[in-house]
Length: 330
Image (cartoon, rainbow, N blue to C red):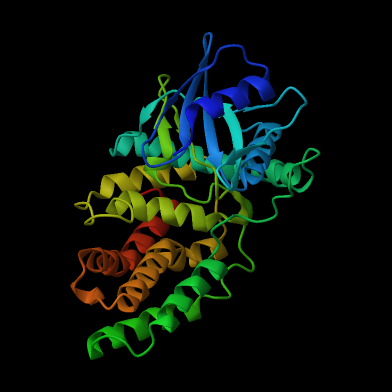
């Protein structure tokens, strides 16, 4: 647990703030609300926050709405925070006011539009990310791109090789084959500045009706279809966790319409939608399957694996419907 008194002392010293009020925003993550006078800020404590600061700085310089980073008195976006024997980073960003985006077609359509605008304005963000301010790292790729994620999934299956029932070994082989088939995914696709984890629960509905993306940890350059594919499967099936949501074609139609109004994918991009829609579900299923086998459990009896496999089976239809909606609007 982060010591609030020590954190407060650090902020007063490094940022020159006289009397900040700090409270926890979440019990399971080191994220805090800071109030100074009439202003509200979010304090993040963790590792590698200089990357996050570089992402927000690139977005701001590109003109895309993003929380501002509060600089220290000597102009640094990130400071070190000593917690026992561990050195952590502290970053303070602007508080984004809003409510969780409702899981309904109209707000999800606005979310699709927000993602499309990000992709449309992505060239400027890519340029800014490649030429960061002093002290910030270059951001040359998004954090969760297929090659690395698929290889990690394959490593979990390899560690569990030979374990499980015959049916489980067969399913593991099918998952591994699907991962290997997509390892070279990406060449020829439209590269934009990705959010990297675009789903409804990483967004907020603002008072003016706009939908704002938050949690930019995985942002950076990458294929546009990766972002859109994950948003599509999340809105169609309710994300990666829990049982798939009851189908409602209006949710997917709204996302596609919002995105289509802001950004146009190429035919090559559209051809890549089947994998883009299934990518994160495939990784989730593969990693979970391997981990259960390693733990001596039977993944085919685990609800989380059954739900992931259900989503994988639904992905081709979601991708086909999404393509039609993007191409024709109906």
